[in-house]
Amino acid sequence: GAVVSQHPSWVICKSGTSVKIECRSLDFQATTMFWYRQFPKQSLMLMATSNEGSKATYEQGVEKDKFLINHASLTLSTLTVTSAHPEDSSFYICSARDPKPTNEKLFFGSGTQLSVL
Amino acid sequence: KQEVTQIPAALSVPEGENLVLNCSFTDSAIYNLQWFRQDPGKGLTSLLLIQSSQREQTSGRLNASLDKSSGRSTLYIAASQPGDSATYLCAANTGNQFYFGTGTSLTVIP
Image 1 (spheres, chains in turn yellow, orange):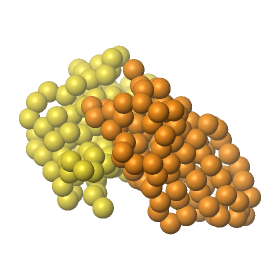
Image 2: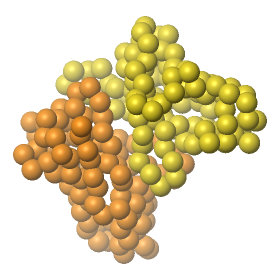
Image 3: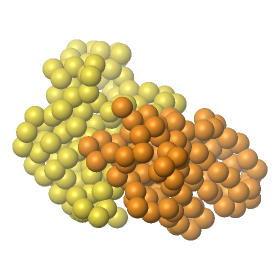
């Protein structure tokens, strides 16, 4: 099946620094990728939809200047948490939609645990 | 807006039991519905996908059903094993977006 690679798996950073998370579709081209945030024992919260070659679409309440999304190619989307603070500590997961029209399946990366000190 | 709910929130069963996880959605205009498994601190693994025109899908000990008109899907796990312990999430695909349920945390006791 399709594979989505997310890197890094975990990161610890100091407050005020920026952190970049990468999401790659390894064996298919993904025109659309999704970024989610997950708090402990809760479901996934969609942060933004990343579209290749255009600006990301952010969900209500998500600061676009805080969470910068870049989808420069059909296989790579990045999420940069700028000037991270302890409240940004969370589990971030990306996903990509299988482009086959008869499939429309969603594949997920392994997630990134961010801890901001 | 589509809302997806999963019942129960948590379930604990002895090994070998058959069990059913429930997923309900408020808007029946879905493209497909997908079931996922998530282990602690990990991403999501796709288990089954049911297209809107289908009634059920099977994979090994897993069987998922879909009733669009009533806004319900079930995931049936036969002969549960300790390795099945995880959180199970369903997601309704409206074509533009995937809406996730709140998840069911399953513990299978050896």
